[in-house]
Amino acid sequence: MNVPYFRPSISEAEINEVVDSLRSGWLTTGPKVARFERAFAEAIGAPYSVALNSCTAALHLGLEAIGLKRGEMVLAPTMTFAATAEVARYFDAVPVFVDCGHDLNISPAELERTIAAIRAGQRVAGLNPPYGSIRAIIPMHYGGYCCDMRAIMEIANRHQIAVIEDAAHAFPASFRSDSDSEWLSAGRFGKVGCFSFYANKCITTGEGGMAVTDDPALTERIRLMSLHGMSKDAWKRYTAQGSWFYELIAPGFKYNLTDLAAAIGLHQLARAEEFRLARERIARSYNERFQRLPQLETPAGDADTRVHSWHLYVLRLRLDTLTIDRARFIDELKARGVACSVHWLPLHLHLYYRQTYGLGEGLFPVAEREWQRLISLPIFPDMRNDELEYVCSTVEEVVAKYAR
Ligand SMILES: *Cc1c(COP(=O)(O)O)cnc(C)c1O
Image 1: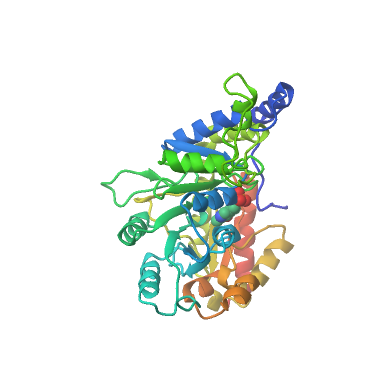
Image 2: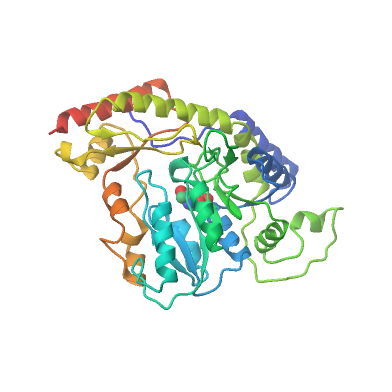
């Protein structure tokens, strides 16, 4: 049997809606994007949302909207995807990496320590003073398990630093401080929440993203910069609702979502909780099977304070109990037809950041230790029971063969 790492769940409803868009003649940003924006905002309880062609675009425009300038500092986890930190480089701003905790999310204690060290003019994360001002923190909800947003917002507010959430994995996902507090959706804590609808994310539009915020001024700026800095979008320009006139207010970007993509998104959105429940069921099965094996560590989580999106199911190897390393473990699974992934080689170990900032081994011990034992297993809503069973028995077989 072959089990892919991911298979998107596309129903007839998505297909028919795309065909409807094609037949309507309205292909780019139009009425379906407007509907998708409203429906998404409603789903996470946000007053404003702007649909974009990626989460990377949302992160970029979020930083642009808060006025990030060259030389300023942006705090980001090292345990994340390229996009989280590269967006700071778009401004020639400085990404300052922060280690993760055992949950693989940015560590609030390390965040606090890093800010204090910068303010004290000490050497941090491979950087030397003089420092620019700290403008933003970009927490990323690893795998769809929310960061401790109570701790992060407390730090950000105390130091007056804007928070832009990388919620690429976190839909739907929620956090509350304790069982007496209200749930709040990921993406609703910071100034801007950024979501991804890339092909293998929780819901997909092929490529796509969303920026959500409470702030009408930020919304307006993000919308403006998503379409060349034009004062009106194409839909308004060419319909009875607007005129032909537009004005360039800033040199913007080309980040708008198409109606073709929104057509898919509308139906994916309607199925988002059903998808989440399906992934949760798979995660429970994996946990049950793998908790029995001392060679494996299953993801820990606090269900009292988190609704987990289960975008990723990340198994950790106890390397000292096995005769093979993680790379070999993945090869063994692959040879048996089970596709896996790794999230991620920490950013500070990548060539670009090594060369640009002199970063490298020894700076972030938790990320450096943990990443070497991470394996992301297949988890997607249409995973069949025989596929799930095959992944479980294959992992067990590889563990049994290479147990010390
Ligand atoms: C996928 C991903 C992104 C980027 O999303 P795109 O929509 O592909 O731009 C950003 N951050 C994280 C953590 C991601 O996994």
